[in-house]
Length: 220
Image 1 (tube, one colour):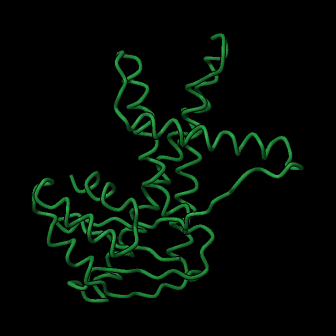
Image 2 (cartoon, rainbow, N blue to C red):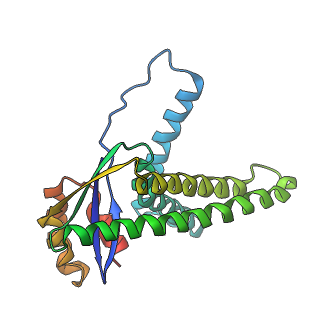
């Protein structure tokens, strides 16, 4: 698994990885009911996110809905790396060449330690809130609050497991310097309009389709 140590300025970093693009293609005719539902749900969610990011909503409710979808999609994107690390056997860390290898490893260890504490605490909080949300059982219709709390709690659980595995001796890390990430680090102090084209060019050279939007969102 390839992980990038993304510089965000002021000694701030984020771990970033993109999953390989997989074209699922059409469902098999003998696919089970649950698998078909998951496939349709995944396609529908991607359609929702694409539509929400178009920013074409006109009514107040529609704008609120699209903002909620975008925030949820961003949460999923930002948690993806730790989730992917849950099952990794080896991982390669690409870090800015402006750092020494020992400094990059220290940053990695610190980030994994912080992630363990952060997601562990959030898991407990959302679990308690999820249990308490049972008092809303009398409201007709689906318990949207419970769904939301359950989704968030599950996400923090997966991230906590990923951070724990990545920090353990079970996962072997290989560190490699990157001149592209060093170049990205030099752009953190510039305004978005001045650096956008160069950030996109760096993302293209690294083969990371969504890096530019992730960088601008998290480096703000």
